[in-house]
Each structure stands twice: as C-alpha cells, then as structure tokens.
Image 1: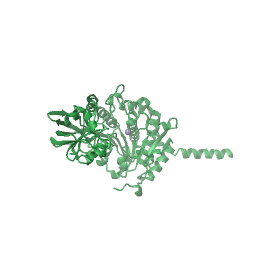
Image 2: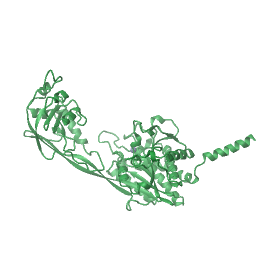
Image 3: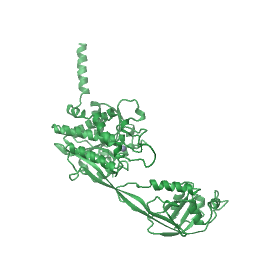
Image 4: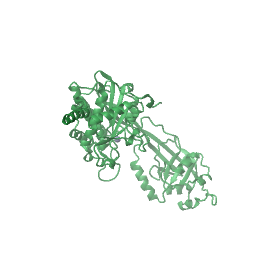
Length: 505
Ligand SMILES: [Zn+2]
C-alpha cells in the first residue's frame, strides 16, 4: 500500500517536472556547446580584429551572420537584404591654429586643440592673464570676448573648473598652460596626435558649435604671448587675492581658427526573418550585438579585444537559436508567430544600432511582442565562481507580469538554471536595465528580457577570449532563451503589456 502511494507520488512528480513541451525539447537540445564553440571561434577570432564598428572586422562578422541566415533559408527582410544600413556620424577636429605675433602655431606643435568647434574663420582677440584661474583671480579681470590665459593646475580641458569659469564669463578663447617644460608639453601633444582619431559616434549629423574654444599650449607659447618668462607669470599669480592682487600683463592680440569635419561610419544591423504560421503578423525579436570595441590603440602584446563574451557569446546564441527554429520549421513545427533574429551594431557606442531599428523598424512595433536580448552569456562573474548554472535576468517584470511569469515557469519546466535578479532593480547603481539593446524596445513599451552573466575581470579587455568561455554554460543559457522564445511564439494569447507599467511619453 505504502509502495503504491509512493508510486503515485513519483508519477505525479514526474508529470510536474516534465511539463516541458516535447517538441520544444527536441529542438532546444539541438543547441550544443560544440556548435556554439564552432561559431564563436570564428566570430571572436583575431582575424576579426575586435569587430570595431565600421571596420573590416565588423563587416566580416556581418557577412558570416548573413551567410548563416541565408543557409537557414531565412527571408532577407530589408528589401531583399539581410542588412539594415546604419550610418553613424562623428565630429572630428579639422584645422586648428593660434597666431602669436608673426608665429603661427599649428595643432600639436605649441598648441593642442581637440574640440569640434568652428570659429567661422580667423578671429583676432585681446589677451588677458588670469593666473591660476581661481575664482578670486577671475574676479579681477574682464575676460568677455577675449582670450584668457590660465596657468592651469589641471591639464584636462573638459570638466576643468577654470575652463567653466572662463566660459561662464564669456571668454572666446581659453589658453591653458599646464606644463613647466616644453618637453613635457611635446610629449602630451604627441599622445594627442596619435590617439585623437574618431569622435563620439551618433545617429544624427553633429552641428559644429560656435562656442568657447579651449587650447592647451606649451610654456614657450605663453612666454611669447606676454613677452616674459613663465617664472614671472607664476610669481604674478596670487593665492590670496585680497592681500596681493593679480598682476596685470600686457599681451598683444592673438589670432586663432578652428574647424571641424563630420566623419561618416558605415555599419549594419543584420536581420534574419522566420515567418510564422497562423499568427505570423505578430513578431518575437531575439537580439545580440555583434560588433565590439576593436583593437587597443597602443601598448604591447595582445592588442585585440576579441569580445568573446561581449557579445560574441550572445551573437552565437542568436545563431544557434535561429538554427534550432529553422530545423523545427523544416519538420513542420515552425513557430506560430514570426521571429526576427537581429544582431545589431554600435551597442558599445551607445546602443545605436538598436536605437536605429526602433526608429526605423522593419516590422511594425505595434505587432512586436517581445525582445529577448542576449548580451554576455559565456562567463561567470566573481559572485558565482562556484555556483550552479545561473544567469542574471533583467527587465522581465518591468512591462508585463505575464512575461515574468512565463519566463520563470519555462525555466522551471526546462533547465531550471538559477535566475539571479540582482540587476533587475532599476535603482541598482549599475543601471543595467538601460545599458543594452533591449532598452530601445522597452522604451517603446515592448516587453523585454535581458540575459547577462555579470561583470568580470576581462570585461572590455584583450583577455575577453574564446579560451575563457564556458560553453556548457552558454548552451544552458541559450537553450533557456530558446524555450522562452518557443513558448512566447507558440502560445495562444499574445503577451499582455500592463497598462500601468507603460512608459508615458
Ligand atoms: Zn555588450
């Protein structure tokens, strides 16, 4: 009797634990560690040079992904192409010079200018001296529409308090001298010359500002401006403006000119589309960013930021999930809703590719049901060194209780890996809910889940290598995303968005 009861219990338990869908399981288990390793060994190889946005390495990765989608028989959804072109703009410094008397100082020789302003031709301005650029000193000189020379305590041009004060008081040109010797200055100028290439990328064409211009100059330049020595200038500064007022120096007018140029970087989102059956007008989106930060600009040894985890791991997960769904479709088990597999560009530059898609969607956002975003799923963070398989799950409850319930349940019915919600807190200082591509869907009130492995010691370093990836762990995480996508794509009702959770414009 007792034995019989036990048997019934055992049967019941088996039933509960195995509530998983046999079809889902058949295709989910086709996502394997070996397959993921094969893909990632290509995507994150040195040959792709860190897949920097706009470079040949990024284009090689894009071509690999597009070929994969083609092989799976996916529709090319962007007017017959797998590529959605994304043009990115950046401002770079153009011409920059400073004339002192008969001497014309070009950028990096005697002056350093790294801004992207436009003076609108050559400007001639009188020069005043503001000592160390303290508030007391600024109170003793009129800098409005003039060039002001500051013996800067800080070399940085952005966020420098002296620069802010001079700007607030209406100076046209701020001349900072932060070095005691010409050699020190030349060393810095050399570094600027080498590293000052691309500016910050954006989706909109930048407008050159006609704002205050800040230049860093050598001590020799300052001596030339006031026709005196650096020592005399230093002695004229004042620590206590009340007791000892700032000494005035006469300088002739200086002339300057700065221009900027707009650089265009060409990249693409890569999209593969699997058409659904009876609910094909509704769309499930699975995303990962496929480009990364490229090579280190200086240093020795390994300079290639392979981005095996960030986000090679997510990219190959998307490819493997896509393949499993394609196989299901071939065998008559294709999803009811359509699925868009999208690897996006420019995540590292500010979620630009996904933002572009959300502003230029290929499929209506109104019929887009969910975005499952995978960004870094190949590693462990120090908090989970010896833990059972886990993944950080972020955002699942933010717009849809329905999605959160589904995500939890599907995991329990299948691999039951640890779902860590540490970063799900919107007030967590790391703000991860806003930091990967899903955010561009969430802000359009499309429910999302973001899968993430945490911050580890190789984050954004050349040591983010394939050899450090735990492929059995990506396998489990990618399968979990697959089961979640399967359920969302095949269930009767569309995921419900909770009205009170919507972001109001
Ligand atoms: Zn990333």
